[in-house]
Structure formats: structure tokens, C-alpha cells
Length: 165
Image (cartoon, rainbow, N blue to C red):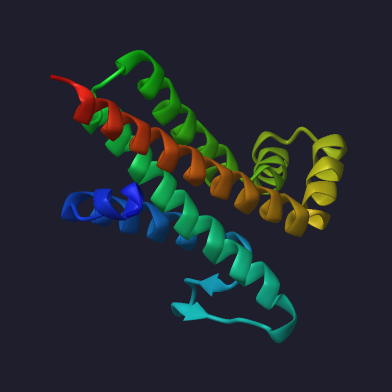
């Protein structure tokens, strides 16, 4: 039994899309987690005590790229049972954005600095930053669940397409 995800990734454009999304998200996550520096030189630094954070950043980036690319594939290419399948594909896109592209523990401190709102948002930002490992771990679990859901959905769509006269 072949995984439908692997069959979908035979398309070079889908692989390129997944790589672009994963790379872009990895750069953002690594920069905000202070692994990647751009001034005065482009530098990558991984302290030994932050390996778990780096691995979670990498996992979130790769899984987000895969889930977003497969969701785009499902929305565009799989046309059978359009209402239900389209909703699942869009749900995968939303889940990937929530899990990887919207790390709330970065957003709150940025809003506090940019908007000058003050101590309340700063306190919430510090609290979320302190719990970043559980948040990232939950993001990985969510992305894995969405990947399995996409696999089942694409498999069901292909099976329904094979049964049509």
C-alpha cells in the first residue's frame, strides 16, 4: 500500500512549494529563536543547551511545508466531492499556519514593542516565551495529525475517483 502523500510529491512543483515554505518558515523561526544572525555577518550558532528547541523548529518547519503543500494539492488537484475535500484542504492550510507560521510567543512581544501597549502584553509575551517548548511540541503533534488526515482524505478521493464510471 503506497502512501498518497509520496505519490503527490512526485510532482516537482509540489516539492518545490514544500521546500520554499519550509525554508522560509525555518529562517523566521531560527532568527527569532536566536540561532540565525544576519548582522554583522550571516551566522548560525547552536548552543548545546538549545538543541531541543532547534529540533522542534526544524520539525515544525518541515511539517508545515509538507502540510501546506499537500493542502494546496488537495484543494487544486482533487476535484471529487469538492465541498468536503476542499474544506479539509483549507483546514490543513489553517492548521499549518496556526502551528508553524503564527508562533504566538513571538507575536505578543513584537506587538508590545511596536504598539507601545506596555507591561500587560510584555508579561504575556514573557509567559509564552517561557512555555515555547510545549507550544512547539503541540504544534508538531497538530501537524502530524493533519498529515494523517490529509493522507486519509487524499486516499478516499482517489478511491472515489477510481469507482466512477
